[in-house]
Image (cartoon, rainbow, N blue to C red; front, side):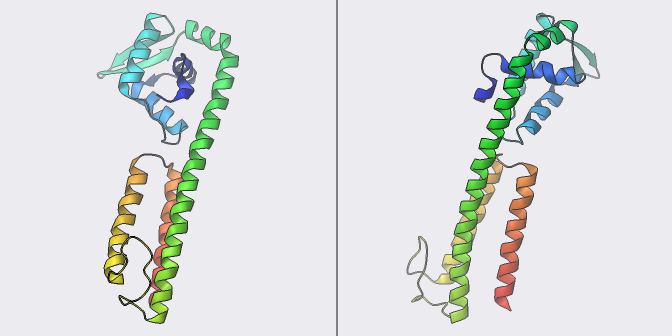
Length: 196
């Protein structure tokens, strides 16, 4: 679990979310994932035991309908929220800082990948303009002395695998994925212009 939620702070945040209205356990999981822009998502094994403990302590209650439990905050839960209002404000600040740090890391990764891709595309464009798709042409990267077309194919596969891995690690928000898609569209447009 992320350090932001150490020392009972996840419980406090669950009370905050339930104070906005009754929710299913998976709604709480989704709201937490959304709050962290997809970079953190607690498991059901993290959320449901806490909800059960909170219910035992009289902070929440649940109703069951259609095989699903809907949790609601009690007066006791609201009292705890009021008592811990300062801690909740500090938690919100910590969440904002954590999300900003993660966003900065992702932006740095995207900038680095974009810089590398631009460098490789500039080199490919230089070779294309010179008509120098030959074994003697300087090759940037891990496959010196190979046919540039084969080298390009290998790099394209490696690039695609790396981008897919970065995205699947779940570290991009929807907005960041849209930005990354626009970057890829720009690269494709650049390659099309090189063909003209």
